[in-house]
Length: 289
Image (cartoon, rainbow, N blue to C red):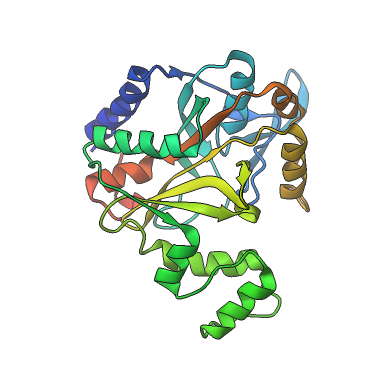
C-alpha cells in the first residue's frame, strides 16, 4: 500500500503538470489562520528569535495560494499537509493530505469537467452525475430545502422531523445532510451544486445560489470547489462573519491581495479519501502507512 500511495501521489502531480499547472509550496505554519465557519484551526505557541508568537497550522493552503495568484497569475496546484482541530471518525483525521488547485479565467463548471478527467486518469472512469442540492434533499430525505429558517422548519415538521426549538438552520441542515450524503455517488461520481448563499464560503453568488460544488463517490465527500468571489469588501464581510465569537485575527495581507485578484475557480480534494475510494477501502483506519 505504501508503494500504491506513492504512485497515486505521482499520478496526481503528473496530471496537473501535464496540463500546464505550476506546483507551488507554501508555509504550513501561519501567522494568520484560515477562517472557515465550519473548520477549527490548530493553534500553536512558538518562540522565534527570542520572541513568543501565536501561530496556526494551515487548515488548507487556500489563503497562501491566493496571495500567489494575486502576484503571479498562474494556474497553480499544491499537494500539502493540512490540520483541522477536533476531527474524528471513519473519514476524518486532524492531519491529512490535501490537493488544492486554481485555474484562471474559468468558473466552477470547468473544474467539474477537469475533475472528471482526473478521475479518468486515475482509472475511476468518466461517467458522472450533477445534482442540485435541493433535489438531493428531496430524493434522499423527503424534505423540501429552503434557505428561510422558518419555512425550512415548517417543512421538516410537515415531513415528521423532530427538533429542538433552539436548533438553528445550520444545525438542522447538517443533521439531515449527514444522512443525505451517505446516498450520494453510489453508482457513479456525483457533483452536488446550487448551495444556498449561507453555505457559500468564499464562492461567487449568482441567481441566489453559491457557485460551488461538492463531489461524492460511494457516499464519501471527496472534493469542494467554487468560482471565486472577487469583491474584497464582500470577502472582508464574510471573514468577519465567519470569525464571530472566535479569537482569530484577520489576514490583512490576503485582503490586500483581493484588491487585484484574477477571475478564477479553485478546488480542494482530500487525497486520503480519494485514495481509499480508488482502493475500495471503507475507512482511513485501513491505511497502514
